[in-house]
Length: 286
Length: 287
Image 1 (cartoon, rainbow over the protein chains, first blue to last red):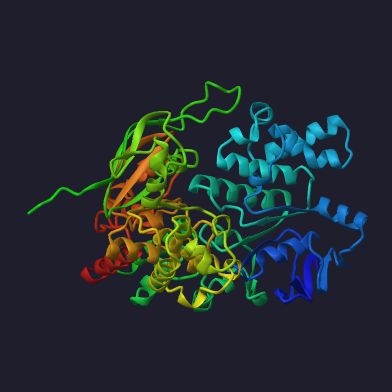
Image 2: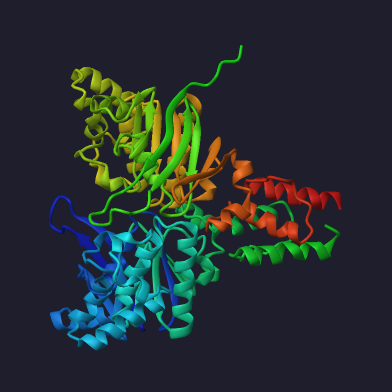
């Protein structure tokens, strides 16, 4: 097991009348280099789960593993862990506090106690990884950037730690289509080319379904489905009952299949749907 | 007899510039906007991030005052201080994140918040809150603390709070972007119902082309300018325009365009998934 949990339970405000069980005996595991989605309706425990994966929350019971070992709870251990497992929060740009893009991205490497020239390299590297031009942008105030650029700076601020796992909580909320595509292309590339393990919590499958190796589905804090992405995405009724939606092109293929046209429905991209519908041409003259 | 639809919000030569400290020559967030929203209309406002959509909504609701030009709501200017309470009653705002706009400890108190500020008698407040709660299916949740509701329910509570003020128009800034698909459907259905059956105008900022199809008119902003407007079947099927701006058409429109390139003769201007499915099935029958 590279990263995962065993019977992880989390109760907020335990022992008070407001106690709420956010996670209930959740167990799953991922391999190094996988691209995983954690999906589920609002309030299903996705954000709570990802915050456990880099030690921000402590389990009420159960365990969290990284590289086969239970993550330690002492301060040194956690610091070390958070260098290797980066977490990008929801709407991360709302937490920007620096006067320049450079300072924002340099914050974490600075805290590692690296020397200035190494910090400079890390910043340049991280901005380059997210496709931003360091020379052009690093002296700007973060608030002068577009929404898409701000989100990329927030990702760069985490990548500057050179993590082995990158976790993103609802990473595309509020981004326009170009910004969403850009971010997902970037994550797919980091995963493919640098072997970065990527974990995304989301409830929008539209653009990301085709990228995923594994999917973990939560409902009311329980793990209700887990497996290979392609297989999970065939459970249309079950996902629908959870208030989740398949990608729109997949729904169109289901619509055709229901009307008796012989099309596959395990296709999640526009290009894939196009090719599949084109196969109908050969069958009869369409 | 044909009567001209009445204007509820009007922008004339509207411009707005955010001044950020020493950066005095920053470019305008909006400029040269001439636009009327009619009573009972449903307008979708689309455009890339930073195109001025949110700024325009804030100008409509007097949260911002124009740098140039003017905004009139029911004929009164948003500039004069004494008009502002009336303007905000007429044009209620729903924000992106429901957690940022719920203020009270129970749903009932939250819906009543605006009414209490009007200093209405409590019996009247109670009745109005009961009415909107029934209308939006929130009766059973009135005693619940808002933070325990789902995202879709929270946005409906926010809409109820606006609705209790009997607005002529609801302004919505990406109201579904933090919601799951079920919550999105919930909010969109509610808003469509209020628009259709209660004649409330809606101005809906969205990044989801699939939501803009419900509007009567789609307006496209880019770099602070209004560059296109028209019915959804015209604007949302103009993929070269949308793609140039980094936007997308609805999935059915995108897929239909590719299939037309491949020689499928599909119904023009189709917008909905169902229309694409029907169009493909009828090709199959003809063959």
